[in-house]
Length: 295
Image 1 (spheres, one colour):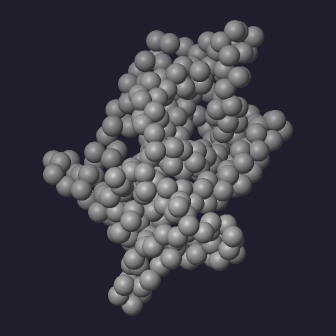
Image 2 (cartoon, one colour):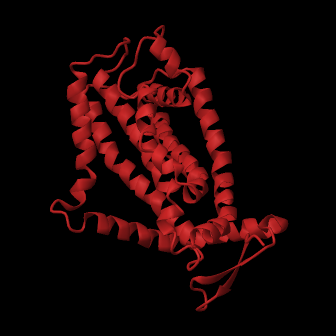
Image 3 (spheres, helix red, strand yellow):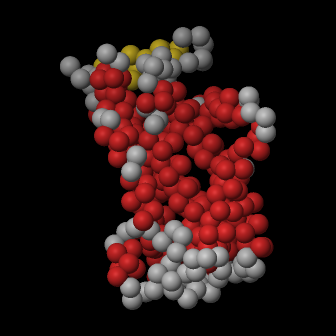
C-alpha cells in the first residue's frame, strides 16, 4: 500500500501536527488538497523567518568578519573578473563595457545556480524531520527563498558599483532589467523545486552538479560575447539561457527589442505556471520520499 495523503492532528492546540499517511490519493479530494497546501504555506511564514535568521546566524557566527563574509566573496570574484576583462576584450562590439558585461553575467549565473541548489536540496536537507514536523517542507522552502533574496541583495551593491566604475548609464528600461534578475531567481527556484524529489530519491544529480555548472558556463555568454556570425554564438543560441541572459542585459542597457520582450514574457509565463505545479509535485512526493529514505 503506497502512502500518499497527509492527515494532520493538532498536537498542542495549533502547534505543529503529527503526520499520518493513508493510501488514498490526495488528488481525489483536489480542492481540499489545494486548500491545505495554501494554508500550510501561509502558516509556515513565521517558522521560515526563524529558520532563515538561524541559518544566517550560524553561517557567520564564529567568523572574525561576521556578515561582511556575505559580501566579500562576490566582491572579490567581481574584482578578479573585472581585472581579467581588461586583457580579454569582448569578441563582438558591444555598446557597454566588457567588464560590466562579465560582472552582470556572473551575477545572473550565480543567482540561477544558488537558487537551484538551495531548492533541489529541499528534501535531503530535512530528511530526518519530514515525518516529524508537518510544515518543515514549506518553512524550508520559504527560508531558502529568503536566503536567496538576501544573497541577491548583497550582490546588487556590487552591480551598482560596477555600473559606476565602468561608466555605464542605466537606461529607462533598467527597472525591467532588475525585474529580469528576479525572474532568473524565480526560474532557478522553480527548477530546483522540480528536481527536489528526484534529488532525494536518486544520487545522480549530486554527481551531475559536480561538473554541469562548468558546462553551463561554457555554453552561456557569461563573461564574453562572441560575434553573431561565429560558430560559438550559434552554439550559444542552442542554450535557452542565452536568450534569457541577453534579454535581461538588453533591458538593463536599453537595447531591448520586441524579441527580448517576448523572451521575458515567455519565461515569466513558464515560471508562473511551473512553480505551483512543481510545488504540488513536491507535496505529492513527500510521503514517497519519507517511505524510501527513512529506512
